[in-house]
Image (cartoon, rainbow, N blue to C red; front, top):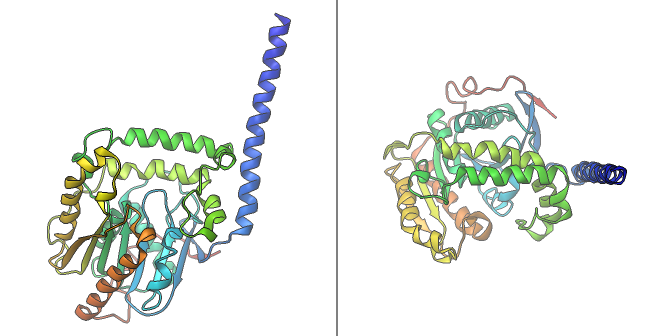
Length: 344
C-alpha cells in the first residue's frame, strides 16, 4: 500500500511539473514572439480592448478587408500591398485574432460589425468603403453594409459563407458541435504549449518569410477561444437577405474551384455550393459571379491577383456611380460603440 501511495505521489508530481512546464513554455514563447513581431499597423482601444488596424495607401473609396473564421489581417499580405497601389486599403484583426486583444462573451455578426465601425471611426478612416469578405467574413461585411447604409459603395465576396448554408448540407458537414469540440481541444493544447512543441500551428504561412510570425499568431489560445464563439454565427446566422437588397451596388462573387476537391462528399455537394454562391450575386442588380480556376477556399492566398482584380473592378465602378463625400455620412460616428479612443 505504501509503495502504491508513493508511486501515485510521484506520478502526480511529474504530471504537475509537466503541466507547469508546458504553461511556462507557452507564456515565455508568446512573450518573446510579441517583442519579435510587433503589429504592422496601429493598436487602438475600443471599448476597453486593443484592436489592430493596418491601413496603407491613399485615395478613396477605402477598401476594408475582412477575414474568415480563425484568421486575421496577416491573411491579406498578398492582397493589401497591390490594392494600396490604387487606393487606401485596410486590413484588421477582429477581437481575439492576430494582434487584437481577446474580447469575452458571445460573438454576433451585429456586434462584430459595430466593433469594426467603431475602430474605423476612432482611427479617422473616412467613408465611403468597399468591403471585401472571405468565408465567414462575407456574412460580416453584408451585416456591416446593412447596418451602415450609405457608407458602403461596393463589395467583394471571396468564397463567402452563405447565411443559410448549414440548412443545405447534411451532417457531418454542418456539424457545429464537431467544430467546437475540435476548438476546445486546441484551446487546451495551446494553453499547455503542445501546439508549439508538436509544430501543429503556423503550417501554412501566406509567405515563407512570415512562417515564424504565423506560428506566434496561430499558437495563441485566444484564437481558438474566439473561433469557438464565432462559429455560433453559422449556427444562428442573420436572416438571408432578399434579392436586390443592395440595389445596383457593384458586387463581385469569387468562388473556389470545386474540381480541386479531393473529398468525395465535398465534390458531391459542389452543385449546392455553386447555387448558394450564385445567390449572393443576386443581392444586387450589378452582381457578378465567377469561379477562380485552380484555387481552393483560400483564393486570396493562392490567387491573390484574381482578388485584387475583382476589388479594382468594384472600386472603379463605385467611383463612377457615386459621389465621394467630404464629410462622414450622417450618423456614422454615433452608430459606433466606441466608448474610448486611445491609440496604444
